[in-house]
Image 1 (cartoon, rainbow, N blue to C red):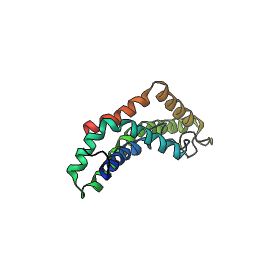
Image 2 (spheres, helix red, strand yellow):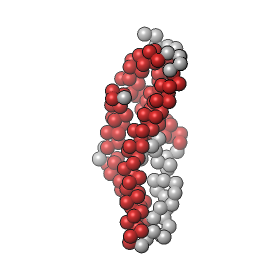
Image 3 (cartoon, rainbow, N blue to C red):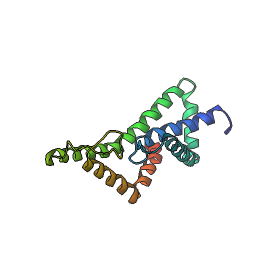
Length: 157
């Protein structure tokens, strides 16, 4: 198998597309508080780290797709990566919704707060809940499980 060429670069780009789309939405990694260059470098580093495991399968899929299927492969990788990231993000959005509901019930909804995880201002209770949940994700090493799920998604999809 020829390791130097346009197909090699495109195979690495396919891996980066899924990983980058997923990591842009993951809790903690996809936070607006991290600079965009840092998030891009993190996605690139993780993509290069897992590419030796996935390179042969990516090359075979790329060669069977032909020239016409390369655009569809890229779109499929972006959709799969976005879907994986949205599944993880849904838990955080549910927690934000529950926190907003709690602040409405106890009468603190009008209290302005500073956004910690998102760019929109939230009440202090919602900011506290999302900060504690994000810290718990990293303290319990669940971010390794999320990154492992990205690698395992290649066997499933």
